[in-house]
Image (tube, rainbow, N blue to C red):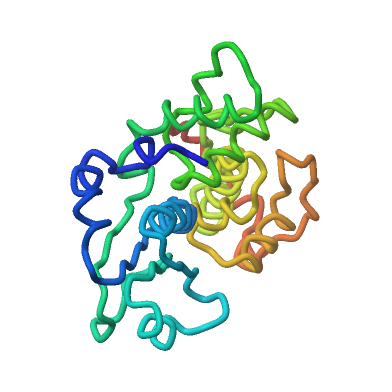
Length: 239
């Protein structure tokens, strides 16, 4: 288990750790997916000698908490105001990037990895949560995958019409997100702010440079309508 002192934001909430454990109320620990809410809830329950649950698994917290007045809930969102519990929010790594080196060192020790780690593993943009940070380390260890800040060189907008340039920008952002997430399509979709279905449509259109999947050649109608003669302006090199 990750030491509590390495969790993001520990400098703030860790100072009140003993006070939180001694309180008579139930605790509701929430934060972004993979931020360590379950890890902290399990440890708090062990120290309190109380029960804990994961919100969304089995019983509803509204019915579970009255039966466990000193119980602990791990969740992704804050508790409804009607529930009698104290709330502790865990921030993500993007809010506390200074936690990344210590967490990477802890994960590397768990995996038995020795020696210095590549700087790229701890470089921003960070994956946002502990689970993906661990996956980042594992992908590097098992597959040698490291992210590249710019996937295929600078973004070149060689047409003057909006449709063609948006198509090129879409490809650029998709490939960058896939590389920065080390091939994790769940994380890539989160980075781009699209659904899994939308991501797979984009991959079909532009390919996946991490998994070596070629583009299917499908073009959106807005691009098909453009004639080559209309896209003959000198290219603009935007870095």
